[in-house]
Image 1 (cartoon, helix red, strand yellow):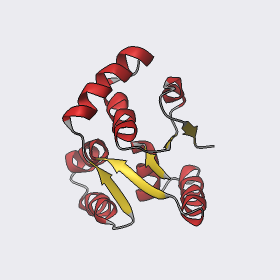
Image 2 (image 1 turned 45 degrees about the vertical axis):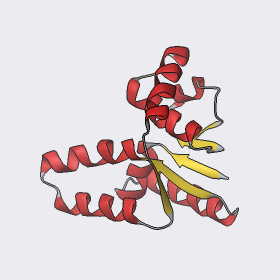
Image 3 (image 1 turned 120 degrees about the horizontal axis):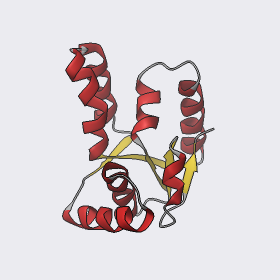
Length: 133
């Protein structure tokens, strides 16, 4: 199965957060042990890099670029079909545009699970959504 990670999960994996980083790391270990592939929407690159670029934080920028270049992370392109699906997802489940893009990317690329820490995204019933706890 392909598991698509939301931006907040990527942030937990790259930046140190005393509460969430260990939980995200442990969940990824279990996913990989089960033979699942990890994927991320290209839109996550935008969300992850914006703050460290604005702050001039070269360390975090490099860490995110390394994450996105990791061969164990499948990058999912945001295609025209994704944009169309995102509009439908947003309209149907009343989600923010970028959240809709992440979910639509996972759906269009055949992911079997979307992992997030945003409970609002569980309103989307077009793909199983797991809330990191």
